[in-house]
Length: 138
Image (cartoon, rainbow, N blue to C red; front, side, top):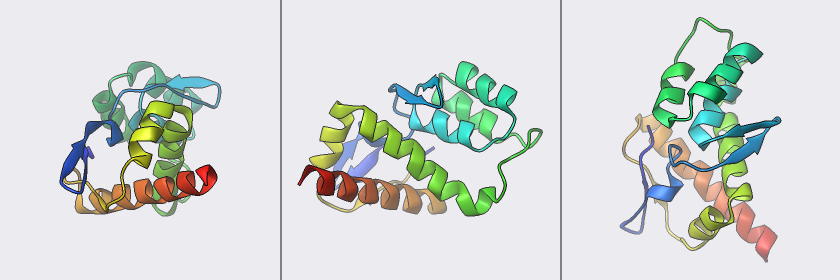
C-alpha cells in the first residue's frame, strides 16, 4: 500500500497507486493503477475479471492480488516491477489532470507506506514516467 507520494516535502495523494481513477486496459475499465497491477499478475481470466469487478476498492484489489490459489504469470517475480510500471504508465497517460500533477513536480519521489522494496520501486517508476512524459512534451 504505497500511500501518497512525497516530493520536496509536499504530499501528493493523487500519485498513490490506490488513488481512484479510470484506466482502460484490455477492454476493461479499471479503477486504480493498483487494481490494474493486481489483475496483470494472473493468467486466470475469470479471476482477472473478478479483480476487475470486485476490486473497485483498491484495498480489495490488493487483497485479491495476494491469492496464490490462482496461477500467476510466468516469471512474476522478475516481471512485477514492469507490471507496476505498465499500470502506472496507463494511469498517467490516460488521465490528463494526474499527468499534469506529476509533471508539475521536479524532486525525488518517495513513498513510505509500503514495503521498503515497493517504496523504492514506486518512486523510481514515477520518476521514470515523469521523465518519459516530459520528453514527449518537449
